[in-house]
Image 1 (cartoon, one colour):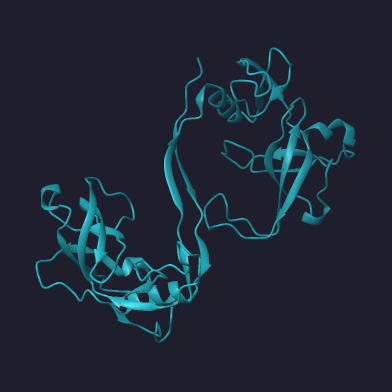
Image 2 (image 1 turned 120 degrees about the vertical axis):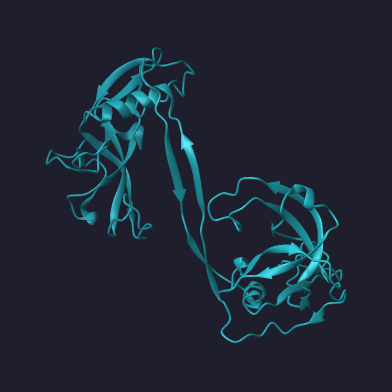
Length: 318
């Protein structure tokens, strides 16, 4: 019985986006401890502001300043904060309708426990000590029993010194991946620098990596078949954008990422091509895996020096 593997997996892709005039004014305002909303065509004040009316789709540019105090409209308790959340101790996620606004803003509320939170409670912004022009300039909300802010927001021209024009948005997903019986067996064999697939008992196709079932016939697969190690490039792309600086992605551009049909397989897998100038990689190129010392999977594939494969031998896998 193959041991079922399990390991933490992180998918991360921080990206940079530019800001239009409304979002730029909103984030720059937070840096200056000023909360801006935008007035919609029906007169409502939207906070956070949007650039187009959600009803009419007209462009919105009428900015107004609202109060840093407000009312909780709904909430949920978070007993176990996760990495990069606003507070390191248990807190409440709250929707807060700031005084002068007609919509609610999502943020964290610093409270001693769920019994201290209720819909309708009054809160105010706790500003971060260091502010850069981001939603995190609001450190959190905190309970407030003082005077409410003005209900009529004041017009604002949205002009600030040194406005924020772009932001980097971190997108990250942490989870534990369990590949299952078929892929666990595949990964274990890779440790020995071998590659195995599974053959469908009906159509006889060999799938690499194995899936545990034939996607065409819907039949469970169990017969293991060793394939490769050599294969054929069926199609490829040239990567010109440098990936994030992590151990397995810090590769100088340009480089080539390809679909490779290993000998004996009926499904192409992904792999990086190296050992050849990127502009000389081509369909039909014969390649073989290169293993880094101590690695559990091929680092890349390189040309074997064999003549290119005939198109008819791999056309069904393009």
